[in-house]
Length: 213
Image 1 (cartoon, helix red, strand yellow):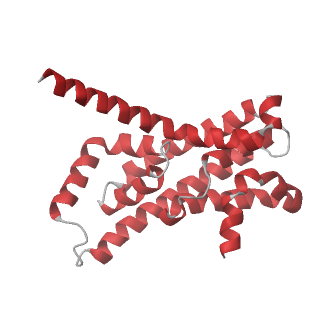
Image 2 (image 1 turned 45 degrees about the horizontal axis):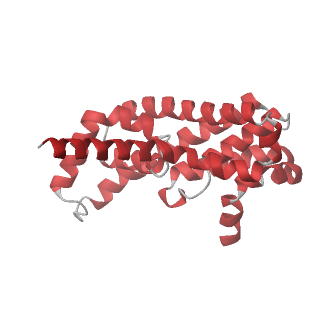
């Protein structure tokens, strides 16, 4: 099991070898990887952005079918997030008598999703860690499944399209193709930039308000 998880964790730099060894079974492997990453919070360490990016690069090289891959990855992420939602929703029913969270905490979570639920579901898809936490928390707060499914599907489609498209476009650049081992870690760090920038801006705004007092 440990060997399997280790191999899956490194799939973003070994997809080409999977394709060579298993042929078109690589589509199933990619489906399982993205599904597991989005369906189980404990597997959030599995590569997501980089995997889709590298898959796009292989599409650019003519080794994978781009349209079929888009359907596979989109289906995997939507099914995974949907399962994650229901894990949270069923989990609340099972733990309601244990008082894991205070009433104030639950009220704050409910208030947050009532005000920002749609945006949180949509944009969390592009933020590491949050993309696996938000579906579960959304279900735990009993947020509308119909609304969740709508905005999660939109976010999932944008996420897959963005990274797959980036892989197809950038994968055709010789310097990136030749240095994929270096490009992948750099690409993997990109999703961390928006929350970091947001945090810096918020800190700067708070500091300015304090200075004006």
